[in-house]
Image (cartoon, rainbow, N blue to C red; front, side, top):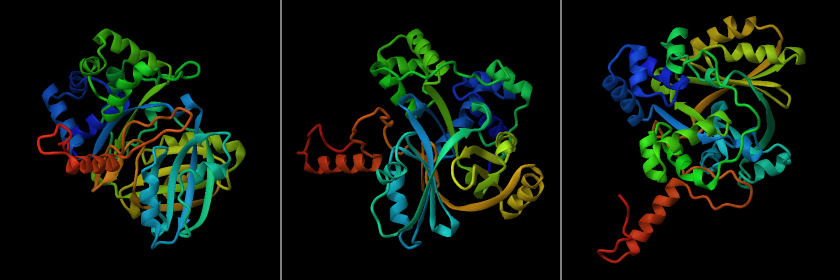
Length: 369
């Protein structure tokens, strides 16, 4: 279980994912070595992953929420096939193991049937499918992270860490990265805290050029950082999706209020029968009941709600869950329009092993370590 220092480090990384350990240590009052050691321990154990991602909006991608109801005895293979897709994110197995809830990245003008059928294998095990468009995500970029584990930073500490108490709002439409950016982006997709020095080695650029290019990508909104956490490893076993029906005049007010709750990891306005959804993370059933009856119940404008309880977490924004650890699912996704051949990490490993088995003794093309 994490302690107060771990909580402060997690919160610091959510607010400033690439902040140097020296600055984090100064803010929380520990040595630089302690801050680095604690973070590396959390990362090695699969509790946290900091990753740099290209904004899907750069390539005209929107987010769609799919609810796929399946036969319980066949939902496992279906879920496994879905989470391997690069354009599927935040996938969970819910409702007693009979429903998969996932986010699909696809153009906003795509037909809903086309959006799903490219990802969903044709299967008699699928009983029902609903797909709704995410219209608006609530909260600033640095305030949407779940902090129900007990974030330790004060507003003054956040300001010292980031140099501001307000989130950066990119100006204008984010621009697609160039081919020259690919080495930087691939490295950041593996580890969002890769140093400027290491990025310079990989790209052949100077440290100054790397810093300048990252600043341009970040301020334009092309590049953002995601901090994936495993709540179960932080003492929070219950994860639920709330599907809310809200009076149209109250949607924005309700969404902004929800996203400020420590229990809420994500809140968005969506199309469909329920016009607002929220991901809620609590310690247990009693904690969730308390949240519903003391926090949600007091919000004006909610007419009705439905609850989907998560049974198993399958995929985060940029991580698969494998044996209770966050792991990278595959190489960085290519969101550019047009066909692309994508290979999952598991497929790549199997391919390398086959090549190794076929290689002659002493061959340079044997299996990789």
